[in-house]
Image 1 (cartoon, rainbow, N blue to C red):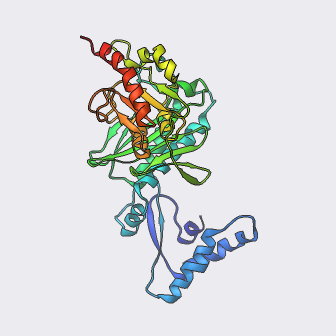
Image 2 (image 1 turned 120 degrees about the vertical axis):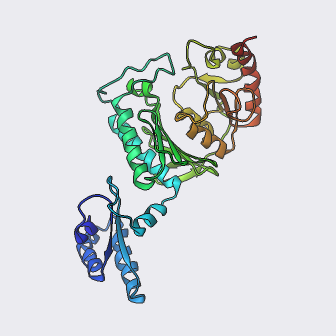
Image 3 (image 1 turned 180 degrees about the vertical axis):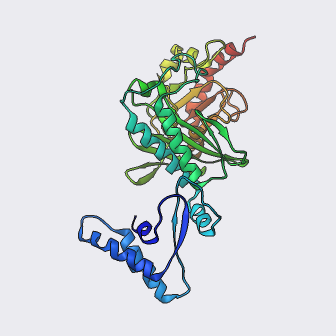
Length: 353
């Protein structure tokens, strides 16, 4: 706000070259804040103690203020391009998921304006709550701010753009839970390129936990810090996706009723892909689902998290993910093999003779 006041910025996306006098004026305006000693003032210290002395050392140095707004810049500016490029893809993904999660959290428990999703049929997602739509809008705007040339595919608004860099977004996974004031939902954001999944985030809007990966490592961000996700089978809890179609075989419903499964694991049906992130975090031993998952706005983020965390992730046959139908994401090889053996007869029955 101080810099905007000094340069006269009102709205939109723009870059301004600050003179030394502009910077000194900004420092003067923000200096009274230092009287409040219980809060750090990094902007003041940076401007006064770092940037201003650097101008004394190098008279040719240039100070540029960049503002990123909802509207695109009126003309190209290398400073704006450099500012956007300074944000790595994982930072953009985290910012986007955080923006969507903030909307979902704010609307939790309110009288949602629209809701008619089927409680029994996964594919009948032709409607959404007001929160789904508002969350996707916040995510889309954030991604467009930093990656305006990228393609976007959201559960509610579909696909736009033809870039090879495509953002897959599920703005509220667990809509039925959420609408029933059951705090089990996720906001999923993933960036897919021809090289694979580049980064992914699954955010819990209620607990304010952010599970994220740069496709190399997987982390939990909470309270401003990151901790490495560590898969573990110790809970013996397995989430099974049962919200499949009713007009064709879907393994989940049969598997969850199998007494052999109950002898080995504690089956759970959470109805949100937040449970996939929980496998990466060691809160679930495994997650099992039938269906086609490649390019899914629902599952791509969770798959990336599990793979980066070191989980065993395959299709229901034990082949590489997306080779065949469904997924088994397990904390370790032993758990995966047990589940593979349990799934096999149900998969054979679903496939038919």
